[in-house]
Length: 461
Image (cartoon, rainbow, N blue to C red; front, side, top):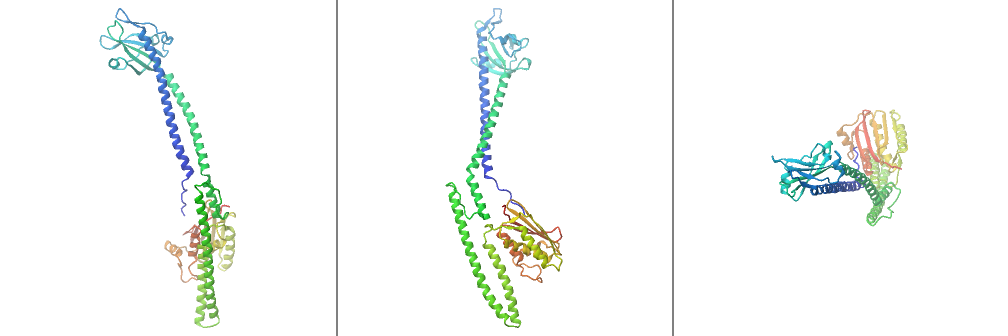
């Protein structure tokens, strides 16, 4: 029988939802903080370049020869070659292209590359500055700040450019991102741990209620007695009321079954006694039919008791003991036919139900295997989960086809009308198995005959 997939966990669902939400918020916060830090670093960076351009604008004077003179702005880094801080003053040549009028000693024999269209952009925005990225000497990544200035007495405006290697700023931003990511990862792990603790603590009454219900089903308790929060108290009260109602219904049904047994057995005993005191065909027929009726009554009474019984209400039965008793009894009954029964079951495997019911289930199936097999029967039982067990009965008989299997499980079905019996064995077994929430399956046996596979409740204790 196919096992049902495990149901989704409420704890896992709540934890995953909180983890996804918290992680998303933390990641977004970390990225936003990193971007804000980068923008603040660039603003500080640009402010330093703006101070340099202001100093250059104050230090620039037109040269009577048509050039331009720039006094040293006083920054020692602009006097050291390839130091990472540079300045340059450019003007427009006769061909309309920008030309270098002056530059810092740190540029040495290089010059700052200007993007196409920069002079036109600055001409349309004379009071503003433009920032852009440009390659620098020694593979430096420069951030350049350019402004347009009209010097007094000069014939044409000049472009003043201040540049600095931005790689230290980028490294600082990366360090900030790494530190922020580490802090937020630790914060996320802490939040997830707190969520797990909160969920498990908040759902602890549900876990306790589930355990009490399991104890109720296994017979370790007769009602729910936990002290639950106000949200669960109505559920606990309703479950207790349902248990009491089922117990009362069970007692009424058992009383009805007992009354029915007494009501039927007395007339049958009278008929049987009256027929036994006489002779003749009619008396023999009455005796025979009252015996059949008594057998039918016993079968139906057992099925009624099984239907009225509350499965798992405290009764437990060791499987190995039942299989051992049945094997010994059946091998003695079928000794002349040379029947051999091999069984295997763990000593700690326990059926969650009445011993009489397990005897009825296994006895009917093993009796059928002895009747239809060719002398060899194997019975195996094993746990199939925390609360289930599997029991398989194999024989080396002729087996059954698919249509015959369906007929065998039908109520009162008979496979051989010439064989003795009422045909209710497998039907009663099926009813008992269903009463315990189990399953019955017929299949081909590896021994060549029929395999009967039972799925029954198991006690974990």
